[in-house]
Amino acid sequence: MGPADGPADGLVAELRHAPRDLAADLRLAPGEVLAVLGPNGAGKSTVLSLLAGLLSPTGGRIVLDGEVLADGRHRPTPPHRRGTALLAQQPLLFPHLRVEANVAFGPRSAGASRRDARAAARHWLDVVGAADLARRRPHEVSGGQAQRIAVARALAADPRLLLLDEPLAALDVGAAPEVRRVLRQVLRGEQRRSAVLVTHDLLDALALADRVVVLDGGRVVEEGPVADVLASPRSAFGARIAGLDLLAGTATADGLRTAGGTALAGLRDPDCAPGDAAVATFSPAAVAVHRDDPGGSPRNRWAAVVEDLTSREPASRGALVRVRARLLPGGEEVLADVTASSVADLDLVAGSPVHLVVKATAVAVHAVGRTSP
Image 1 (tube, rainbow, N blue to C red):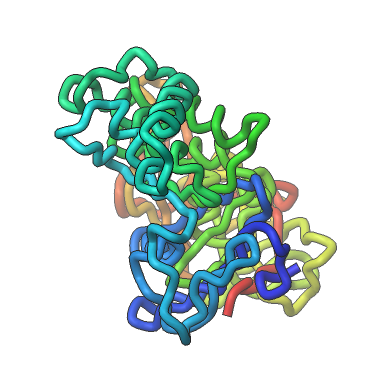
Image 2: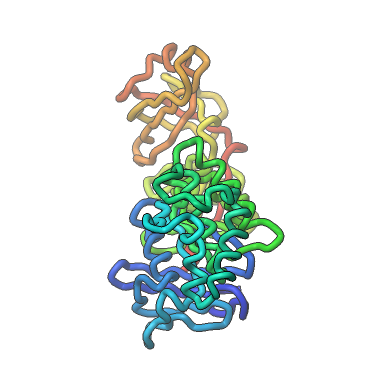
């Protein structure tokens, strides 16, 4: 089912914004959490701005629970009438209002009585574990407490769709897990909330999202259940967050050939036929590094040059080092994880000529195709 024929309830978004070269289609079932991942400049913030009504589309349409919020032709529904709530990196609490009044602001603005708004505020403060902070002012709470209050304020407005823009990015390592727990409780609990989550943190996607969309260059290049995308990534960014090597090219009878001419033997998915556009993925831990050509039977054996080395763990003979190498003559980048003792034994430095070996059984080949125009 594509976005154009999505459910009557939920979100159907054909997002078009020509000035930022965005053309991405999203769909969201009621109660579903969608994580949007991608490199900087991929269009993630534009997606949230269009959904929130902070930016007007140049085409496409946005339909939430059967209501057309924007269609590129008529004046879009203003932000305060969309039934959406945006939770940003910074809590953005009103400094002159006490915590309870901050949380009551949404329902009060929507026409709720003072009593009902206060009751809603107290309920959501209790849900996020901040009931004891009700009488404080924003400058009297910690960063983690302020973000929990911001979650309560967003939910008190009873949004049909919650928009989360890197909600944990500004928190320290001590506060982030607690706020993530709160978000999981409100998003994945008995009364599930529909949400679009923009994040750079893989842990956020794993803990909070049902599905993930990977954006690159304003287009959806990958989507599916979180576990599936991480297990079988089909984009460079997806492979990077999954910690895998990825080489793109054309599927062959026994694997893949890159545009640079590098041949890989691997295990093709059943839906990947020779001649299809495809990617090959494998773990850096599966890459063996040799100074001299090892010969023998390995089918994936390539000459390369070391570009740099990065420590992966505290220095020790058994610690892992990430070796970034460039294949010759194709120029593709391959990452290898080797022990510090191996680096010393092989005398590896930037510029060292090496040979890389990967077993064919460690290489997975997947068909690829853009999922948005």
